[in-house]
Length: 398
Image (cartoon, rainbow, N blue to C red):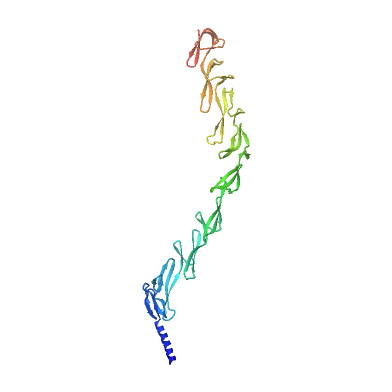
């Protein structure tokens, strides 16, 4: 009897414990018995079922971020497209599952998984992977890098030339991010040619040697050694040449390279005179001097000129001074006049007036009376020289 009673007692206790199993909703604090079902207070399609003391989540639709979606419903979140699908794997069993077609967001544009596109010379692709926690990771990353040059795309690793510059498109990694840049190898351009001189290189131009330099991002052909072109050849720095009566030295004047005067001179009647030299020319009856003046357009050139001063009038191997009067063999009274012109002075002599002649051929001044003269071969003793007109005279005899 004791044994039976004990067994009954144990069975009763087990039955009582089984009857006491249930579930408690932590959100509301409400207790439920096994088999009870109740709906969520916030999500209308969510309900719960108490099974063997455990709360199982159930649903009458697809739930996504606390929102309910019916079977076949479609919605979008970011670049992911979602679809609610209801299935019945077993009789009296309904399963709602959310299916997703994931995509990538690239600069505000949605791209499909596996899609490839080009933007700013870079090729991108959309890759979707699933993390360990089941969440999706959508990455829109570059697969091929490029560089933009003059509105055109260049591939990574490509090299090209523009003018005197060599370019290359280089791909690099910046803190885990793929990027690209254009590397440049500059060179100096030789004006008037198609020559390109690399930085550090030299070139010979018109007898001078130049070096290509890069300073403060500025390219420059720097003069290293100079010479001067002359007669299809070259004259070295510091050497001199003679042109006409002037000596020139190969040198620099400012940023110009050329021949610098090293002794100027003038050529006159086949003879050389140094700059500043003065001499008298009896042929033209003038003092001459060798002078120089800078060229109006080319400051490194000079004009050599012989200037005349203190002019006179040459007459029968003599020089008559300006305004001087004299009588020639034909009894013409003459005067030396100097004519001033813009670039040079010249001289002329003109007849002031015609005088009379006596019987011996001597000249007689106007106004003279009582001298002997010949008139058509006849000798007259009482003659006078009278003025006739402006520059003439008249012989009168009785």
